[in-house]
Length: 324
Image 1 (cartoon, rainbow, N blue to C red):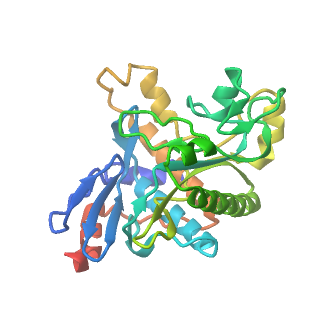
Image 2 (image 1 turned 60 degrees about the vertical axis):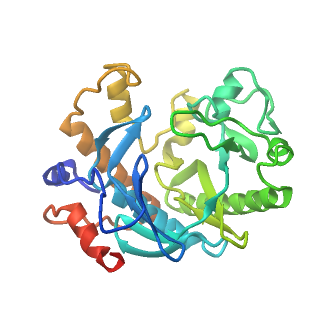
Image 3 (image 1 turned 45 degrees about the vertical axis):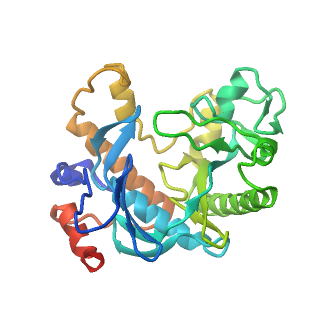
């Protein structure tokens, strides 16, 4: 288990931007910097930026590395189920991948009545809805209860600043968002991926509650798993050992709670309108500790903490020099 004090020397050694002029076709996303290479390849550099409220709040040491390496673990564990976009990992923060046409549906798989957003099944259920995403849920379910069966709750992929909107399988086909056969293939793959994730998480004392997947197709129409898989940012995990007791007591299940920063900001300002106060160092370090703990718990592998801080961008530039 990583101690916060061990992280203190790394507080300022974060990757805010991965601007590398020698690489072509730079696109800066909320948390990733992308470069399109010849030959249908793409470089994805995971920064340490923490995004919320449609803005960048701060940077968390090792966040980009944790997300990249957690996804790497899961891509390896699921490559027998579906092909993925990975070509190689030249750096702990970087994946070189196959450039795909991303399907315009975000595929969210859920095992529990949970969530906080307006499109979560818990929010919709508490508002009185029982028919959602083409699925009918029974009356009498309590917060964070196990669903009668694993369900897929697809949403549109909104532009930055907009909100995802719920979809039903019927709408996906009737509106021509995806052909019926392709949607059925994606659903079959997503359920198999989730079953694998649930099984391996159980071995680590975790419940895989829900997750989102992104799929893309190559020039021949073959479906690939893209983006990330089963990371702390794309998935919700609860601790199995305390789940029953906490739910019985009406408490929120114990999880990798990375929302310290979001909660702290929202208590002090309107984050959509006001200037955000400087995030305290102790909060940044605690968030880094949670990310690293999540990596170690999910993968069962130790996180290799450098003895001394070394500039992240310099390391990445050196490891990507062959692509200049």
